[in-house]
Length: 384
Image (tube, rainbow, N blue to C red):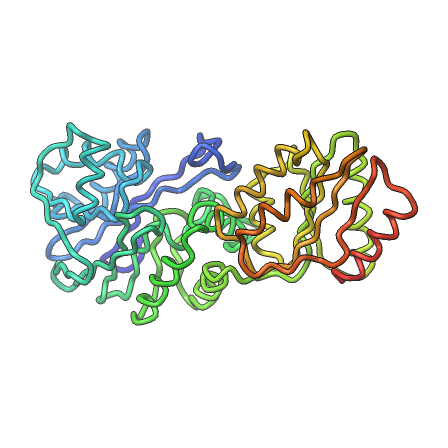
């Protein structure tokens, strides 16, 4: 696939993967992207995951059309992008590896037996001329590892964006929900903690004339790029991009679930969009994504060992770890003799910034009754 007349796609699709990074469900697989720039000199942009070495090297060779590879540019050392660097260097022993100082430190940690090819250490703002194409390296530390850099090609106005603007899913599978859904789950799960660093990268990118974005995961983005930049602006400033209520609950005997469903029903009657998640059964990453994308969140859980149910604690740790903020939050607690869930939850959320706690949080004693149903109606009215 041609990105431009000189830039070719050389990535692979992984349909054998069940969990990306050991925790994210990827029902549509995963893409590991690599690109080849064929100019007076040639440059290969990143490698791919370990089991795809032969396929990737065949695609690189096809793109090079018998030419040698002059440079291998390593933007990100995470193994899904670096696992075949050793094989590449054996196939192209004259290639120069281009990276920053932290790149080479990490490569040596992962691959101590790597061939000692010539190395070109770059700093942020350095350039590399391939002929018509001049590449500028822009450091993007902690988006989402400290060695990450992105590369801008001024000739074809292409931003090679490393993990930024990536998404879950193989590139040979059509995503009926469009780019934003799985891109949001990817961003919030993997990059979400580093909003300030993403903001820094967006500021640098705003100074560039960009016609296409070539990420390390997901499709190449072209045409009107404003949608992608607008969403990254929202996500990295922790602003919601959906109006509605995410409801996350845990339930032991079904009573807390009944309360969550009753609230959802009342919100629907009021015309409020909702998404509801059973934290013990549904994909936790989807629930985390919903909490960040909607402007309101309801947390419903039982008191458990004078604390909260473990799945709710895990969910809250994902929110706080990623800097959850700028939301309205309500709590529905359940307890048969000493309900403490609300107190525990609000204590955990104290580290989150700019949260507005609902005035109509709800306490249930064992099962719903007339009083707790009335409290849920008041909460539904407040969140409508």
